[in-house]
Length: 307
Image (cartoon, rainbow, N blue to C red; front, side, top):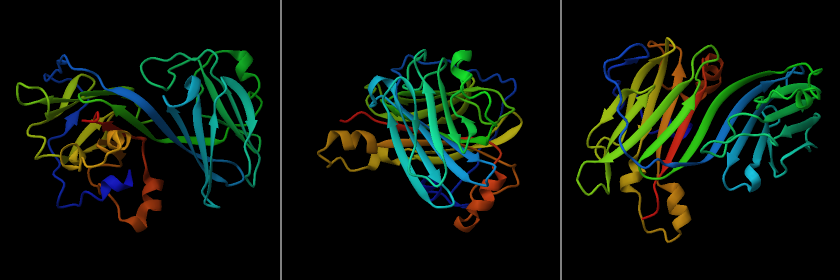
């Protein structure tokens, strides 16, 4: 997500009129568009255990995995070491090595329920034990037979940092996200429609939150980057978009799979402390920014189909 910030500076960003999550007369009417396909979801967690160990755990769900399994990446912040593990079984437990501390993964997807994407919406359980401290990163199951294996473990401090979702298709991306621990769930819909009658080139963009228009960008080819401030749950959320690659990236690459995933429009929803805080801090202040973070970010990558 940091790469997107380099596209902007304080003089390049224009903050438009703010949107408040209250009543609005501008009600969104969904068009008859073809939805994009969500093919990958990565969820990043920040974990602190009692031994002062700081971990960043990324859980990735992808349609490329067999039987809707997942990949987990564990990054030790202090040693700057990172390990990834792909889990193909529907349930089980696994000791994760090598680390300077004991790590065990416990998961159960046997009753997982899916909707349109690779990430289950309920009925599954994913937990990590670090030195016998529990990190629950997928507690969406009510089966006590599953949970009783970990009920006696103390809970480690765990917070959601960000969600990264990738979509394949031309027209419509939808997501459901909760930016703040004490906030509400919000429905996000991003649509792109053609200005001409041929309906081939998406030139206009509309972003809606909870069925209310937040952004309506005309002549998207010339307004391919921008920013808007919105208010959700009484807090400030910055919405940034960058669809430059949709229009100007070279098509000389003969590998269609590479071209499919590289021509991505980027939509970043990022909470911040308030109107008086800076949108982006300098690189040297990133640690300070992390300490001030008030909510979880959402990054949507919308990849066009190969031409």
